[in-house]
Length: 564
Image (cartoon, rainbow, N blue to C red):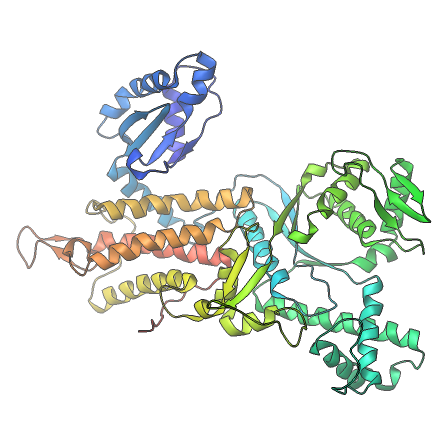
């Protein structure tokens, strides 16, 4: 509808060329269904009062407003804005084209042949995946799905941190428990904590046995590598059970083996943006990203830092030719972002191509009480614990309900409730209710409506509001993709379901709201069968909700039970 209105304005407003202007839904419903700031932006060019320009715009629409077959019912001026209300029949008829799209509804290929790579989760494999890192899983996965909806070819990627002192630290921690034969009264290990370290020790003994070297240094290396590989398999299983797939797993160690980090370091030296100090190699690119901060590239013992390898990893992304390079990282990476941008800029790449979504960590609660840290992990709640307790649907929906930069409280008790207080249940139950309406229609011998069904009886304010909201779904998808804001989708679904549930509830007292009913009563000549039109609207609602849930990686059940 916005596109149709934009075309009308472009054709009817005499001032050419028109400046860039917006068409949005007014925040106050009474102001209309769509509003434009065209008069505000034109006023600057024409050097006129915005309200005067707005009145001129409405005057130019006089013929369209008088046309009974036209799009617009009314156009009014509010300050410098022009607010529009559309004819009900226009909303009704436009519903057909949306329903006809079926499983493609929501797609809006606004980009051409473009590609994107999204790196997400990338949790350190020295321990179990915790709920904080896990938040990046659904975020990255849904951002990828949203970008695919608007035409991008997307690569989902996991960056495995499998080099560095962390491996030896893990090996030392495992060896500690093997030495003390896993005794409960053994001295506390100085390295990684938690029952999982003991588990790694037992697994390593069962798998490696006599192959564990007697030499301590060699044993630490072997046990560290075993532990990293074992934990990585667990993380992969956790991601699979979250409904997350990756197209590519990039190992940090391959950047060293392939010589990519070494080549990048040589290129940085040639660019004159490094310096040697205190026996180490530093990045010293003085630009707006670093703001005079220096960062170590190579340690005093000659080993490249994580930062150096990460520069190499990002250079590889540029060379692979992606149009968008997106990182979904925890908020503790805030300082890492400008350092990477400074480095790639020094190498001649566009730093603005790197887009980073920084998410806040998650606090797990049970009602009002904070959940205690996992005994297995030692100092945090694992993703597996939460996933096993609440299931995939609630796990993903709850982690997606808030903007990434907002702190998130995950209430386990609420996530398990089979009531409308639970947001994911609330949306899923609406889908199941719509499916139930279709089943009841079949049981009553009422056929499902054809595509060309007459929709003239859809005249109630709530019906027009639901149709209007259905029209907004493709734009919500587009905006969520372009702005990397996946939380827009669950918020949209909840708002749509609120309108439907209120509509459905009114049917108990007002027969006009009954989907399977005849207005006018009995077999009288004045009776009007509204069921076909209402069933068509229900089909559109069910399609919209299912497409939204599918984007979130959440199921759309046909049958659900509500607790008393």
